[in-house]
Image 1 (cartoon, rainbow, N blue to C red):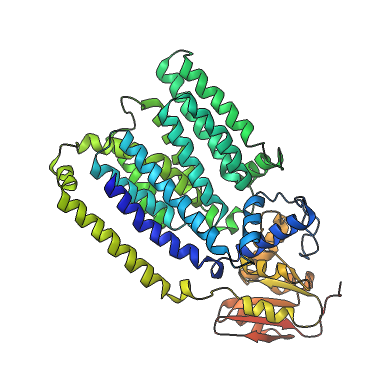
Image 2: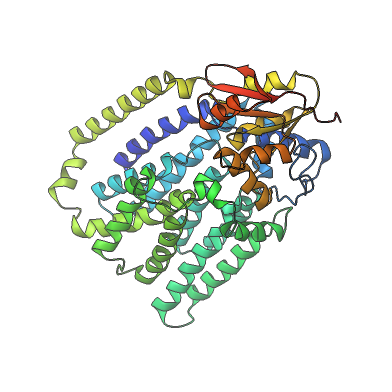
Amino acid sequence: MKIAIAIAAIFCARFLVAAWFYPGQDGDLAWQQWLGQQVMQAHQLPTHLGAETFTAAGAHWVPQEWAFSLAVASTLPKGHFGVLAVAATLAAAFALLLTAFRSYRRGASTFAVALTTIFAGFAMLQSFGVRAQIFGWLALALVLLLLDLETPFVFLAIPIVALWANVHASALVAPAIVGAWAVGTWIEDRAWTERVERNFVLTFGCVLAVFMTPLLWKLPVYAVGLETSSIRHAISEWQPSDIFFAAFSGGVLPLIAICAYFGIAAPRERWRDGMQFALVCVMAFAAVRHLPLAALVLAPMAAQRLTTAIPAQARLNAILHERFSEGLVFAASALSVVLIVVSLTKVPAIAGVALPRNAVSALSKSSGVHNLYCEDFAWCSLALGHANLRTFVDGRCDPFPPQVWDDYLAVERVSPRWSGVLDRYAVDSVLVKGGRPLAQALALRPGWRVFYRDAKYEIFVRDGLRTASR
């Protein structure tokens, strides 16, 4: 475990640096801050999109990240975002450590624990941010640990899943994972034993837990609907995994390969692991956003099976237990932490502000109410804080109807009908990144002119078109 802790410290440093500078990188924080403020003012969750969008006002909305949005609204405007950044970092780090502990508890060798911890950390790296789903990683790690312990304390998983559901809709994977464990237990015991009954009762409890939110039945319906939503193709996190995605090829795929090569079946957890293995493999291939969750499930399985191939008594493990080797690993870990912090804080994309805040602010100061189209829909989240800016599509994305998404993509891809879409929706301002195809097309289009320009972004406005003031 000592070496696993050193490895986790390296990932923790990387997570913390990314989290600390996160407000300048992710426009989603803007709509979450806006949502949190709306909830605090109205003392209830919104159920529909409002006049802040001109394409889908009145569309049904399930604000499933409401609790996280309250946290953002309580910290970001007051200069206390660092608290939330540290909390997200610790959630990811503890999820990784709990996964390593599960490997250690299964009797995995030092080398196997260290290697699979690296794979799990790598699977988490690209998806990490100060985001609601990060706290879901910790919740899943806790649930998996309780399953491994096989004690009555396993029922603590139910309140954990309930808390998870109030933070993020990914909580719906919990009943599936617990259910797979219960089915595997039933197959192993070949009878309705006490532990089989306990695991099925736990599964039912986890199903009920996902309804224990202010959204009630709407949350699971929303989460299931996302799996078949027509907007998935427009969101990178929902794309199927492939070898070109580093978190898959360098994180989850090696864990799958180890389990498959050395045998999914293990003497003690053969069917329980097998059922969970099948489930998370489907999840991992189905969508990029499932990769960290899959890694948390797979890492202890892979470590246990790798230990079969490289026993704890092997010379490799003996070397790792020597004081000199341990000291060398910890020294390398400390040096890596320092280098990560120093190097990343000097990278402009991390240390600087990468979002078009100045561009949006400049447009908000112009007269009239503007119908704003953003080349990256997350940028339009920044407009939600300005009363005279209305969005085509913003970072909330899920509630916007498929037709709106089709029209949005037609403009973003500069398809033959792009200008017709802007005309039909009476779009009078477009935020783009300088030099991109859409910026070039607007520059050549009569009636459009540059209103704002900086080193990265441009805003084009349409002459002679102004939407009515509110």
